[in-house]
Image 1: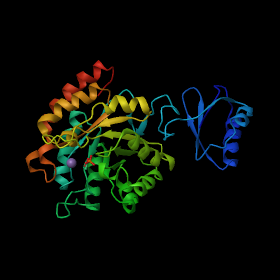
Image 2: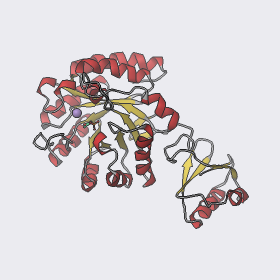
Image 3: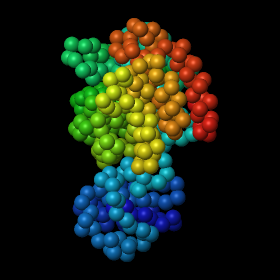
Image 4: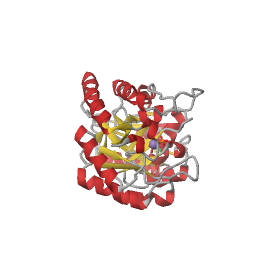
Length: 337
Ligand code: PEP
Ligand code: MN
């Protein structure tokens, strides 16, 4: 259920509404819009008396939310949410580009890549220190050593750091070094992990499960938000289909679809979305044209030497050229890179 306060509702009127919901054994979550406050009711609200709510002053409307998710829903909050990572803002006028290697390999490589992508206009550095590999004998990442290299690259370049956390027990450790916590496709439905990152104050980049529906994806985001963390960025990264030519089928339609369903920023990963470096440029342009709030790209100074995902990693030179094209496309959408 959603309680829409009127534009002039006072702080004490809002407080009365929150108290009433609390007393009814439910959890109120105030959502601050530009014009008014909306209060989402979390929990089984079937017995909550609509009439009694109407009796409280400052309440303009009360309506039920039809979707299974509430906090992420457009029904609860119509205006797009901005997720701020220092001076980098997702969901605003700027399209935010995140770039870097698939995995952190060594300090020198990382710093070189970071300097190069920063020069081309990236705002965030990506790189996995904990790698979710399909086989147990594949390179698993440098763990804390990799996180330290990332933090150093961040200090040297001013880029914000986004890196994956796979285990609820590592959330504190990764939070120490990262600016944005990434939840990978394989963990989109790892509910203990979602709850754990939901308890932090770090923005979360949530990647869509490779076989998840939009509803399942948004419910995963709801898990994070229900724990108090409102800073969630959604990422389309391709889905499993019967096609074998590409690693995944990148669902560009997810961008406008999710924007109809949620107020959260939506970004796209054309690297994992295609698995082919030859397709990354076209799909990056398509994603920005479709209205994505950002991209996350695998970029390396020597892509052929990447320990992980060499086939889908573009060179720093290709990235620089791509950025020039993306700037033009962003302008058509009245956005900036
Ligand atoms: C990644 O971005 O490093 C990654 C492993 O992506 P995904 O979870 O989308 O496969
Ligand atoms: Mn990768």
